[in-house]
Image (cartoon, rainbow, N blue to C red):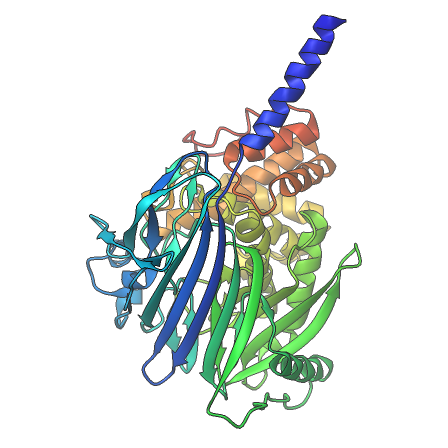
Amino acid sequence: MKTLLLSVFIFTSTIIHAQQSYWQQELRYTITATLNDKEKSITGNETIVYKNNAPDALSFIWFHLWPNAYKDETTALFKQISNDPSRKKKLKDPGVGYIDNIAFTVNGVAAKTEAHPAHIDIIKLLLDKPLEPGDSITIATPFKVFLPNYFSRSGYADGEFMACQWYPKPAVYDKNGWHEMPYLDMGEFYSEFASYNVSITVPSSYIVAATGNLLTQDELNAYKTTGAQNTTDRTGKPVLYTASTSTATKTLQYYAEKVPDFAWFADKDFVIQYDTIQLVSGKVVDAFSYYHNKKKTLWENSIDYVKDATRKYSEWVGEYGYPVVQAVEGPANNSSGGMEYPMVTLITSPDAKKESLDGVIAHEVGHNWFMSMLASNERKHTWMDEGLNSYYHFRYEAEKYRYNSVFGDAIPADIKKLPADEFLSMIYMVINKQIPMQSAMDIPAEKFSSSDEYGLISYVKTALWLYLLESSIGREKFDAAMKNYFTKWKFKHPSPADMQAAFEEATGMSLDKFFQLTKKEGKFE
């Protein structure tokens, strides 16, 4: 009996230790930002309370200054695009963007910095004394960002401003050390969870969509009232927003918790739609869409697509963890359907029809699960974000339309008449047998030879892999496993090993044969 009790104690202690060994840094941002729409610039001030939850002291903190990626042709961004034939046309007229006026202080005292040896969009903030485990410091700096012509996420085009990756941002420090990385077009991000208190000043005629809750009540009421009218009546001319202030500018206050990023978008021309979503638990989420004022636009039904995606992902993966969800129509992008940020996504699909617009909105809204709430290292493990999301994106399209974005209009009519599960089975069979996908799944973004390979492996091959896993263990077990993974790792930074462990715990099965993620192979058998 003593031996049994000792074994149980040791086993329990091991579990507790494993749970306690995980840690992540804690950040609180306060940012003020002012848009100059004539100069195409954002002037800001930033204060970050940075708490060190690591078991070791920090003598410096790497910062991302990602607007500098747009500064000249020597950056990793320009080099990557220039070396990819399918993306070179993006550099036709990129303009110049950069961040300036950086002057860090730490706890009110001017601090020293060091340039990164290779990348102008990374800088090292030196600390006068080590930041010990459990201690916090206050970091502050002014900054000014000049936005480029829109060609890769951040910028401006046709009167619309996209403020993305726009402020000085600490790199992630985790059990594997620092993850300082340059901005890339093909390759996304890895960011610390934080709370954001952000004040945005814009000319009064602009409508703003941003990460988080809009706390400026007059503005929020105007968006909701106008948006609800446009959601109810979609047959006539839309009701347009009218500024509630006679002043030249207005300041909008936003607050967000447990998010890895903050983005915002501004345009005078947005039509607003608004509705609410009630989830199974009873939780009510505000839903908005913002789109350009054009005749016969497919965006007239965009609010329905936002709501449907939020409900479906909540049902399949786990309940949506934020108070608001939004989709924004952006400028046409020649190599992207959209780009996700917490609680708000930019949709740039240039040739959308109903099925594809709904699908891309669902995909980008879905990144609130696989990017935001489950914030894996997307630069190192692209499939954990794009691939997991694509599996649910394909499932959404199949159930709703018997459609798949890989094949578009090429799907024969008799296949589209099949039940959803048989339709998906046929889609994945063709993907497996007919589309060459030789590379391993677990490849860092910068190692892919081209954006075509990046897309096929990170999105399509991973979706196929998940479908084969589902087929092997059954959808019921698969769904339970994904929900277990989500519950355990929500608002954390999971790794591939964490996902495998969560799936094995839920299914009671060893899944080693499926998690051969670095194995180079062709077809799945």
